[in-house]
Length: 223
Ligand SMILES: [Zn+2]
Ligand SMILES: [Zn+2]
Image (cartoon, rainbow, N blue to C red):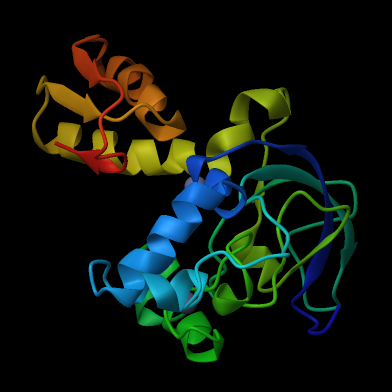
């Protein structure tokens, strides 16, 4: 541990996001490299995954359930043995962006991230020195803010995607439906977040009228 607000955790369930495929699927990462050089991809992508996207080796994985193995002196809400969700983005919890719930935009972490855009697990050194969640041990800064305890009685396997895909799907589906009760949801894409959307749609008000448009190239777009 480095700071008294740190905790160490041991991941024991790690799930796969499509974002994990990119670093190990060379045809995709090479196409991204070419796209950046030709100016066809927004340069902000390079600030997240590096100017030569996903040049390894580095630890991958940004969804896990973990057990707390050590806590710093200033950590008050966690104890060794707690089972926790580890969010994919590293955030401080106190900056203006974090107070709005925009933790992936945390200005504290952006200021210290090598790429200047994002601090996260599993995306390589441009997003910071945090490593990937397919690891035996992770250092978690701002642990009281970052780590979310899994409620007693909840099977960790059922919330394995809560670090990223499940929360992403919730954000895309539930708040808009609260503003438009009974509205329909069109899901474009076939990744884990997209598969969660119909379930959230149904649990939101009981109407299973989400329409999945599987296989679309617009992988992270929701309409
Ligand atoms: Zn992801
Ligand atoms: Zn912050």
